[in-house]
Length: 388
Ligand code: ADP
Ligand code: MG
Image 1 (cartoon, rainbow, N blue to C red):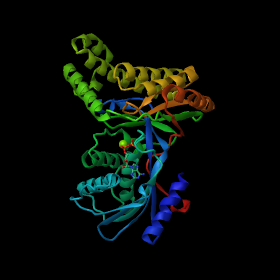
Image 2: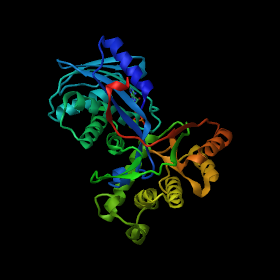
Image 3: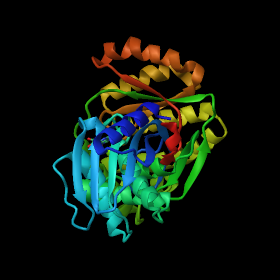
Image 4: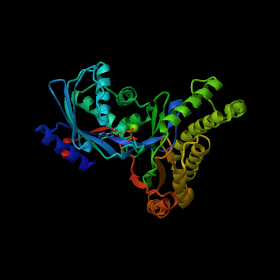
């Protein structure tokens, strides 16, 4: 429970609005354990929600006004009226909220305004999806204030629409779906074509270590668009809707006909899809040697075939891999070109790995890493008012 955040949003709410909030809610950030760039190829991903979240204190209003205070942006305020003509604001943070409310309205749902205070501790812009946490907690807020008939999948889809169409960021469905649907102590295998989800338990003596390389992510948008295009070209070559429909045997038979770069990109996606399914099995049966190998292969594939890693990330992964050997898995997570590394490892190895990072990473990269020791948490939820 994020008691500190709960206190901050509750107190800010009563100070600013002059009465106590009726509702408290939270939605988590996430980390993807394996399955990189597979989402837009209609493939599989295996994320889990983490113990970092966006938290809201809110109350319904009788009129159509929405008033929002953002604790993390110096208590900046936003105000708008509910309707189809909600326009973007010049405060970026406010657009995630405006977008979600606008798209809920466009779904034909009926609700009136709200007073809202939001704060979060998901590091912003680090690839742990603070944006999805914010969108999902706002969707949950309106669902609970007005008892809206929305499933968690619809909250996620609505959040994705807001991010795609209102904020203007072309993300897949993974981030919002895991933030809305995660189960405590489980990762979630998501089929990005059908949106079917399967919870996979994480053994209770294993930990998830997220290490931010603090390498500024550059070239992200242009490289992302190039990869998407290459994947589409490869799918077209194989005559399928998406690379999810090509297996490795078919790929091997015909890859020589493809341009070599496109072939490498397709190989990553096709092998990564299979690794993600295999990793879910390995996790389910607590088979660390297999999981570790799959994560190592995933990293090598991102480095050599998809070519989305950078030196600092490879250095960090190598330091952690050398320290853990077969005892724990590690790979880059997220879109690439910087960002975070994720590791799954036995709890009793955490200190050793963190010490190895402290001792070697700065020396080899001139950067300082930030380490987050995480547990797998439940998705978006209404919190009891009694926790205040
Ligand atoms: P990521 O999702 O990887 O953290 P994004 O760039 O997609 O990075 O989203 C970060 C943006 O989301 C921030 O710049 C801010 O506008 C908004 N945001 C995220 N969390 C909060 C928060 N707690 N309060 C206000 N805005 C937030
Ligand atoms: Mg984001």
